[in-house]
Picture 1 (cartoon, rainbow, N blue to C red):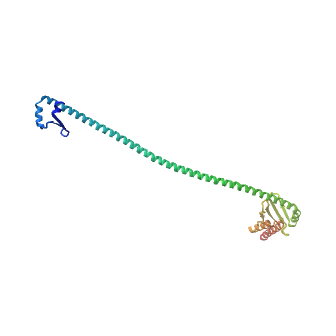
Picture 2 (picture 1 turned 180 degrees about the vertical axis):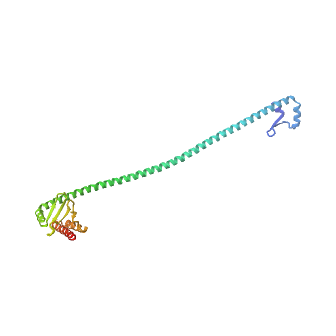
Picture 3 (picture 1 turned 90 degrees about the vertical axis):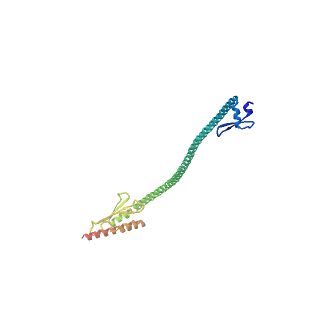
Amino acid sequence: MDFLSRFCLCRYDAGTNLISVYCRERKGPQKMNDKIDSFPEFRQRMAAFEQRVYQALHERTSSAALAVQRYKDEVNQLANRQRVLEEKLRQQRELEVKLRNDQEVAKKDAESVRSRLGTFKIRQQQLEAQQAALVEEGKELDSLMSQKQQEIQQRRRLLLKQQQRDAPEVQLYEELLGMRVDASQQGTLQFTFHHLDEQNSNSSCQLTLDVSGEQFVLLDTNPPLETEQQRQQLTQNFNSNNDIKSFLVEARSTLASRVLSDVVRDC
């Protein structure tokens, strides 16, 4: 134990940055100072002690300042890292929002595509059903056309047979009614009546009949009939009873009346 530690007690006041030295015998600071002044060796040791104390305090203060600075640097680094992380987190959230929006858009697009595909599929099924119906209807029409053609051919054959059977009667009617039949045009018969009046042997009239269809059609008359009703009545009766004799008699009478009325009017 050195002299200072045996006889003195040192205290450092951080507020005033002063060192007070007290004697262990507690005789007061002033008496101790008087003794210090009277001992040169003690004064040297005291100065060295103070130097060591100041050095220790300086080192401690410097270490504390360095620690504080390191702490501040670390805090700043952590704050910077936190800001970087917050920015990344913000970007990540924006990406998540964009991803959700893209997913919603893709979902809506997918639903729209599925809806359009469903509509196209339904339309395709409808078109296929319509096509099948049209094909079936076409087959029915072909069958009906074939049936009608067979009926027309059969009717033509019947008419030819009837004409062959009625040939003598036709000749008789031609003589009695002064009539001539022209069948040179296919599907038509032209009847010409002569000697309508004894006083006018050159008078004549004619009508053209279409016999190619299912029903007889009066194509033309000379002279023309007065009304459409007369034309319809002639063909209607003929198509209902197929009595060509009555038809020819009625047609000659009607046309002869028209010719004679025209002759009287001209006179």
